[in-house]
Amino acid sequence: MTNETWGQIREGLISRVGRNNYTTWIEPLRLSQLEGGVALFEVPTPFFGDWVQRNYGDHIRNQLLTSGALVERLEFLVGTDAPRSAATASSQRAAGTRPAVAAPAPQTRGRATQDDDLPGAPLDGRFTFDSFVVGKPNELAHAAARRVAEGGPVTFNPLFLYGGVGLGKTHLMHAIAHELREQKPDLKVLYLSAEQFMYRFIQALRDKQVMDFKSLFRSVDVLMVDDVQFIAGKDSTQEEFFHTFNALVDQNKQIIISADRAPGEIKDLEDRIKSRLQCGLVVDLHPTDYELRLGILQQKAEFYRGQYGGLAISQGVLEFLAHRITTNVRVLEGALTRLYAFASLVGREITLELAQDCLADILRASDRKLSIEEIQRKVAEHYNIRLSDMIGPKRLRTIARPRQVAMYLSKQLTSRSLPEIGRRFGGRDHTTIMHGVRKIEELAAIDSQLADDIQLLKRLLQG
Ligand code: ADP
Ligand code: MG
Image (spheres, helix red, strand yellow):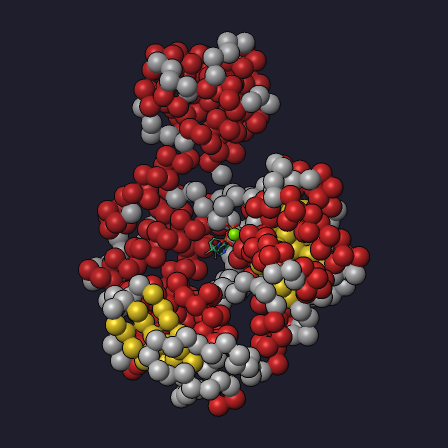
């Protein structure tokens, strides 16, 4: 493969890393060799190579793989004629030499340099407010995110966003960061995952640079920590997080946190941290509803229309997907991506039939997902019993009745057979399930409270 070929291949990365990152980090890379599974790139400085490796290494490798190049590993070499080399390192071209260690940092322009000093995670260029579809389930979270993205005086601190997997927490946080970097370039905005926070902290401990770590984190204007549930149970990291948090709040700096559940529900998180996290604005992203899913699909399809040119999609396909794939947005997007890739490969219009074929596994998994576990959880929640009682042996009516409701809903709302349902209810016999289903049918006809419960639960479960 030549550097020219690479020049074409790399364009596919624009949509993955965003236009800015692409211009800053990908375009300057020169492919100097591809041999024995190693792609060797010339970079202007060691730091540059290190950064690209860490932040875009996987993307680059995947992109090369997709284009048919057998690449296992990327290597970076500080070269003379890479575009930005003038201001930087000495040549290190001899094969196999490791990059120079003492080369000066890259001479990038103002804002980028400032951000580079921060140990944050790279932002996904696609996760902007523009590309975020707003619907009932996420409108509050979106509004709150917009508010902090204005960068005005801090009105609530922290902003705590929570919700299940793939509902857009990370997307919103990146959108805030993009917006702030654009509108308020002077603010130091730091985004990272709780895992990275821990990693940096441990590294600082190991290298005896805890003071640097502290001062760095205390010097930011906006701190965003994603997936904070990760530090639960990790005592010294929690402790450090707590101090960082307090120091920033004291200085009136905005903090934005995300987690997969509400602060009070994160196990093994110290109480003082929980209560601190609850001090600001806590908003949740609800599971998507049909309209939101359809909106997201339409937006994506619009994007693909640009990418794949005239590839046609039959009416009703998006509606079908929005109806059937209810788990999370990531899965939904993945389905559409696959569908377009497949259709363009075989040169066919995207029809309902093609979708059913091409996405059979996702559709099945999605069915399964909406089924029994979710039903059991919701029902247990509703009747205030423990989830384990759903599958346990207790015969007490206050437990047996909800269990039967869950059996009934499992039968009604999923395509699972009675024996399959029985297995999910602690290995009960299919006749037990049938009995439960009948019992609820009979009772619901005469007990309006129960009938209401069932209606409500159905609504909750079907979104
Ligand atoms: P989380 O961090 O909550 O697990 P992400 O923010 O990573 O979820 O979102 C998963 C995927 O779904 C991303 O590709 C994201 O862009 C997309 N997504 C989620 N919600 C929306 C939305 N409302 N509009 C557009 N895309 C969305
Ligand atoms: Mg996330």
